[in-house]
Image (cartoon, rainbow, N blue to C red; front, side, top):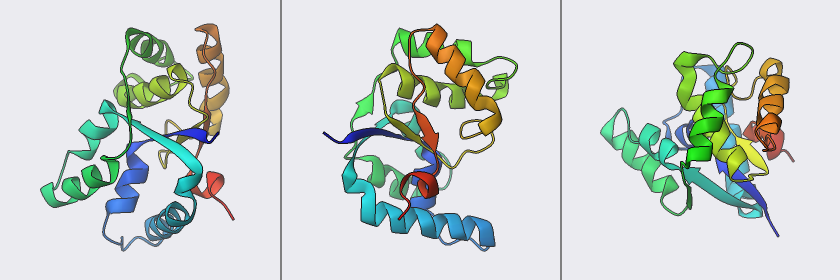
Amino acid sequence: MKDKLYIETTVISYLAARRSTDVVVAGHQKTTRNRWRLRRHEFDIYGSQFVLDEAAQGDAIAARRRLRLLRDFPLLAATEAVQHLARRLIRPGGIPREADRDALHIAVAAVHGMDYLLTWNQRHIANAQNRNNLSATCAAEGFELPIICTPEELMGD
């Protein structure tokens, strides 16, 4: 049985974007593309309507590329349990109110029992300082926080 992976929008954006002139972003893009090509088949990959909504924003051509990458992934439902957990994740030491979409990504992955949440969002999601609070909140609501990581961490050689 393959591990279940929830793919957050930043990963899709890096996969679909033109090569950045920012050396750090370009490195992340290259890592994401290489590891994705070599290792994605090792996981059952899921998205959500939240990912689709974010991927559809912005430049129309880029949005089409992002949505094309997402078309084959099953979508996890935004159930009442997801909504409730997301509201609980928004608090001091957790996810700030203005990043409510990030809380929804975490909640949908936790409620649906994903093994991993793959993201490049290191501000609110893959943030080591938030991890204990996120884990404690999920546990208090009866869910396990998935392993939150970047493509570098998960799909390393």
